Image (cartoon, rainbow, N blue to C red; front, top):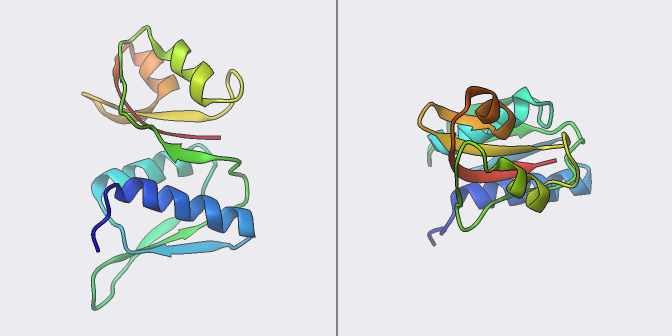
Length: 130
């Protein structure tokens, strides 16, 4: 069976395991986008480490949870945002100002909405986490 959105599947697994109190998630979905989103979540203190595990069926990702995620999900449809349009989406997807991150795909790579505002670039909204 194929998945329509592997990133949504990984974030759903992370949130479900986080809510049940587990300390790690092992997932089969492994792509550059997923690793980039996980790296941003790790840099902002929402996840512990993650590592690739070799398996005979394909590579797995082992994600260590630290128990601080309240909610995380993908943003569908993937809205395009100009360099000055982040306020509207912060109000829509985050519970309060300066709490949580929105992952944005820009021409300079994946970054959080805060970094995109500092660098003055727009992009496509990918996911959020708080």
